[in-house]
Length: 138
Image (cartoon, rainbow, N blue to C red; front, side):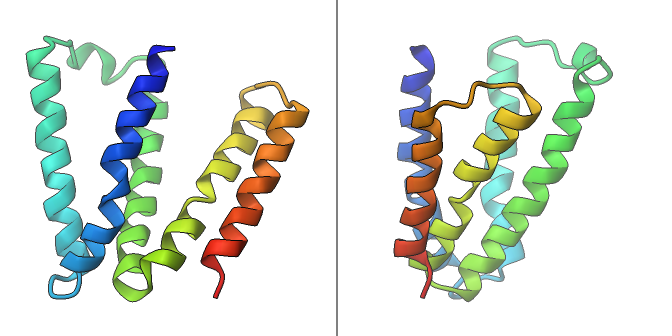
């Protein structure tokens, strides 16, 4: 269950991203805020790789590299759009809609990765959709 600790840390860290981006984009263009915030992410990722002495070059062309590159493209599109949405709209509406990735990622995992579909997952996906509707649609 080590993943649970990481997931909770991710939740704690990501919780303040949207409000802080909203505050930043009151005076800073969303693209510049994106560059600043994600520049810190890139520097931190490089530092983690260096400190952990994780080899990089061997993985740049490995059989699974295409998935990492595709994830990078998807992350770029998603985060660019997210920052622009936060600059234009209320956090209380943008975040729940963005949060639908819980639903869509779960469905992709079930359909494309053969993860089991259980009654509990169906209920969770349904409740997530209801929660987004109740909190995000204005």
